[in-house]
Image (cartoon, rainbow, N blue to C red; front, side):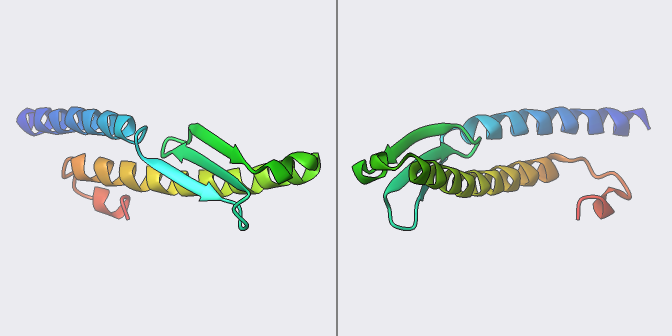
Length: 108
């Protein structure tokens, strides 16, 4: 029994290391998003850190329009980055989980 428990603990520690490595790798995965007309472009990492924002000069003339563009475009980029982040971390976590009877129903 204790051998099984120790094996599971080892697998959990290995899974934690893989999750940490995946989080680090996600800092290098870039998500690009642009407004529908291409006047605003943003780049985020899959860990949702903003790397760059490019604003067309025409947007600088209307503060409210620029704010609207920023909100819409950043929200779309954050949603994409979150999806990539959660998919990658879930795959690593599931892969590294020890085979505990009854846990399969929780992972679906």
